[in-house]
Structures are given as C-alpha cells and as structure tokens.
Length: 173
Image 1 (spheres, rainbow, N blue to C red):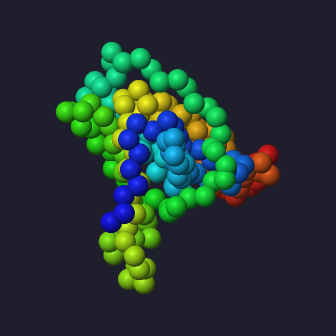
Image 2: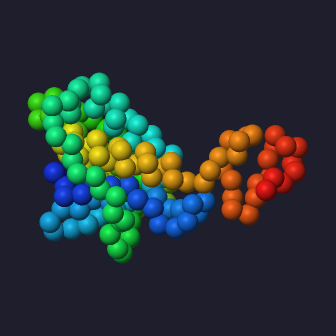
Image 3: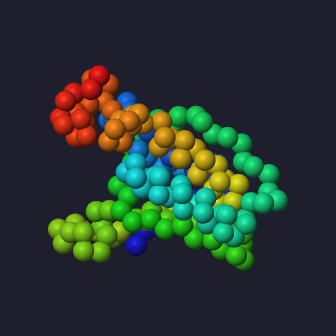
C-alpha cells in the first residue's frame, strides 16, 4: 500500500474550485519538494474539521501553544488530485504530541471494486496541534461559505430560485 506521507508540512488546507452550488472540494498539502492534493466531498471536509477540533479539545493539545498563522490563500494551481477520498481517520500521538490525518483512496478501498488493479494509496499528514487547529478553522469557514439555506426547509438556495417542499412546490424568489 503506497503511503504519501507529509510530516510537518508547510501547508495543509481544504479549498474549493468553482462557484457555490457547483464547487469541488480538495485537500492540498505542500512541503519543500512537492504539492499533492486529493478530491473530497463537502460533508467529509466538515466532518474531518469537526473531528480534528474535538480531538484537540479532548487532549488539550494546543492550550499553551501559539496559534498558527491564518491561511486564507486559494489552492495552489494546478489542482490535480491524485485520488478521491473514501475513508479518513484522525489520530493523536501522546508521545510526539502530533496529530495525524489519513485519507484513503475511494477507488481501492476494500470491496469497492474487483475491477480496479493496483494498491490503495493513502495520504498521511502529520502536524502540530496549531497547524491542525488552523486546518479545522479554515475548513469550517470554507464549508459555511456555500449557498444560503432556505428559511423554510433549510435546503440550499440556488441563485435562480428554489422549489421548496414546505411551500407546496411553489417557487420562492
């Protein structure tokens, strides 16, 4: 199983390409030699960011640590994902006081397809608590930048309008 490992990356962020409603989400990591990215679903970004924040809170990892600088820059171009994320995990190492995130290739997950050949690729990012906290902050803000929710049904509103099931199918403007 090939593992692409980044220990203390210069940058680890979630970002998007496209307009709200048609955005594609990516995780991107950079070290001095390379930039790699993976495609990911919006809900996965949200769950990962929330889990990272919860994990850091549980272990009290970044209480006495200076915050990492905020990173609001766009993704580095070209955005060329090496795979689409299937399963993910986040783990705290109490010995090293580092957090690691692993993302596994959806196409090669166990039982995903018998037709795929090759091995599953894993992206592993090992980082300090302050870098992990900044990843979580940026990711939560990124997910919140999407389309506004309908006040009646809470579904996303399109710029052209919205057929709301709570309004008996009438288009609201």
